[in-house]
Image (cartoon, rainbow, N blue to C red):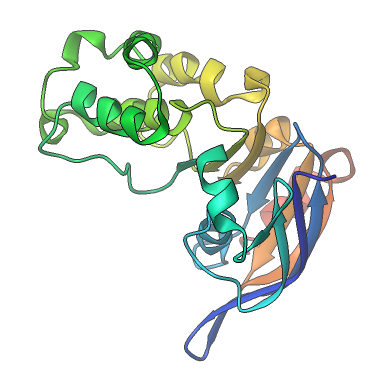
Length: 225
């Protein structure tokens, strides 16, 4: 059974079609990288897969569960890293991770392990609102993987990170992490290097869907012209 199966997925906001007739299948453990200009529907797709938005048409199965009917069965198996860090700004990094750990039944040792992994143990008691954007992104990565999700949904995951910080989080969300991943990216060469499968969107419609080995970076660049 594929990790993701989309057949004719459509989602609209009023009269505007954010996604139209999106179909693909992604095997367990593989990485789908989604390319497209701003407004193409990339973030909407992630939010549908994360069970935050209901599909209006088509069939969607995530980790074997049909959406939206069986969303309850899959939410705890998904890790989402979006444009917003989903952290409480008045709480510290440690308090944020402890809160999410309680939601998922995860122990304190995992919180401390991840704070060390993203090099935030020394700043973990400071309110998130006082941290730099790069530090906040590192804590957000830790939050997304805290419960060891089977599926990672990553929207520009390396945004705001310097090269050293990218190397810190790569074991958690990179190709070697072992999880099924969907990554939204604007980086043709970097995105292709991460991908098993590529989806190109323009105005909510599929312009390209293929195995990564069949896609040239020029074809990705064409999406942005």
